[in-house]
Length: 338
Image (cartoon, rainbow, N blue to C red; front, side, top):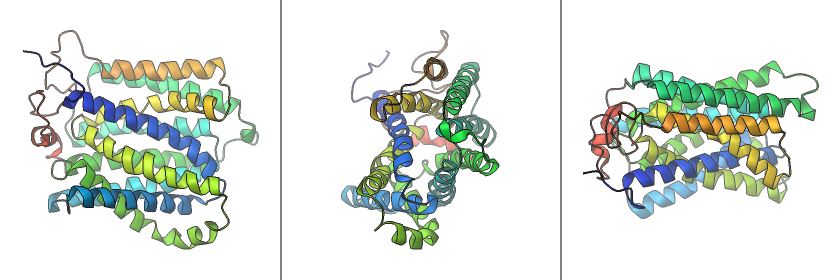
């Protein structure tokens, strides 16, 4: 008998976690633009991670989750250094050299790399709908990037090669960090994996402590508040909800949902920065969302509660697709990763 999708069911919670993560990460682009004018890339990354670490440590203590198991530490350390640390520094630096549209376009290579790495290292399938949806979304990201780049007054001198390389490095770090984090969720809880990955990332960014100490007293209050916001919402909370969803969804399929970020960034810039998007930008945003819808859809022959590789929202691998909120069956999909 097909289970109902109630507000408290694992499928509904997973969808809610994905939506919160995508909206939070989209808002980060607006905040990075504001805070980046007062803080250097490394200092901004360290301040953001430090704020996130405080929140996450408090949550771990309140929930009494303790340290993650030894088996989870390999993925935690890799994700912490590569994703939490390296990705944030590279993206902060890259956005100082290229316009936001170009940066969004380059970083959106990440989900494609993620799907390929998940297929190679985690044994996940590449369903046709996922491939088609990613192609549509990537096309939309290209349209958004080109339209925003064409309207940017900062790109008259061309796109610096270093900025392009940094954004590509951020995309690689993003994909590699997610793939490393997936097996760790077989052993630790989403909060444990996120909290200790963030602490590792903070430690990796400690060489920038001197810059942060120098820049913090001179930074305007708005920039400091944006840095704190980046740490609390897009990092501490959104990375935790991402980990929750990642434990229950194939990495490649979940990564495709982040193609909605450019479309949401366009809307947020419209509302908060009064940047009216061109019709071509709106078209690209619509393509991004359409591709996500295709990648998340099921074929007519696929049962809604199936645990096939096309990716149920309630489990992966050998899970049964029932409303049991147990991570044991859903997390085994990443247990064989190297």
